Length: 474
Image (cartoon, rainbow, N blue to C red; front, side):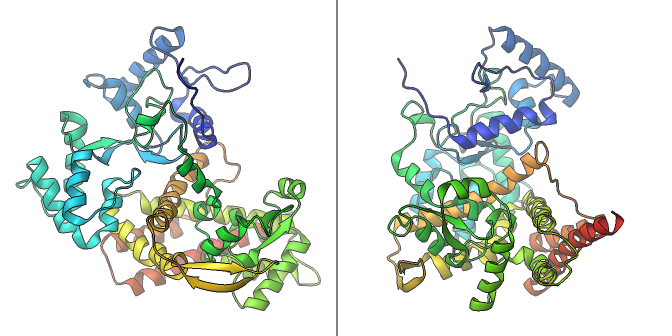
């Protein structure tokens, strides 16, 4: 009997989100007695036959009825994010043919000293080896005989041309993150991603599972703060023997992931607190800011925090604490949606290079190169340089990967079952598109930063005014 495969919680979330997405309306699926989804249905079953009928109708609407890969092309076209969570490890990979095959990986290891990471797609590799972009371009063109194609020096054009050749003509340069598997799987793709395909009957690798002791929420919400020290503190069993480590200000609302924002809280209280703000937590956050002279919120929520602390300390506050929480939640939705609009582009190399240089790498230099010693109260006693090992680099790579994946995941859920959906005015959205274009065209950074600052200021002010107007109209 085959060994039972553990289903990662992220994959369960993914299934529920996909089922609720309007793109799959009418595609048959049932639930088991325990209310879990019957994700798998072979083509010989009644459900499988109905799924095929549904897909054929969708293909006609999409103009794909004559495709030789009708189900694969149709289900890819319908997929909301083109990225899929792995059932085994919970990580996300692209459904496009963008993950280098073993033969290409061996060449890259030899020619550019690439260190293999099973989650990397070709854009990740280019971002890590920006100085070797010409070498990578030359390797790809040679392997695919593309030396004479139009725009043959534009690496984005070359990559997407290769993707098309791999998908439609069977070139063995790149692989998809998950293979087509319709109607067996509801979304049309195999449940095990490329990362875990050959280990699918062995469950999750203990070494990989160990990485989940880190607080990935900080990565998912692009949180500021000393994220490495905060991870170390939250995992310190000597300090948190009985109580759990809790964020005073929730990172899901835009607060920093930093030792200053972490305190012990009983497990039952932590479980019931969720993302609530209280009078006590706001007083603590205001005190923290005074003591360390640093914002307790991330860069995209500073305008809102300035308003909250001013209003909260007034004798007659304009808004209540729950309204503060709602403002922060809506701002987070707008921020994540803004990131998605920038990141979703054919100019991935340019965009990811911008974030690498201006967001991820500075955090690596400032935090990942050090280890932290705490006192019994969780305060940093000493900071030491750490030896940079493969584990250090993998954790940094995981930080980058989760940050990007979270943007797509947030967008996917915003389209379906999030109570608060992004709301950005047309004027501000136009400014956002300017920012995106400037990043893609590698404009002067000072210009880009100024526009980003203006944009973040505007969207925060909009949310604040929305709630103030709501209060005045009641």
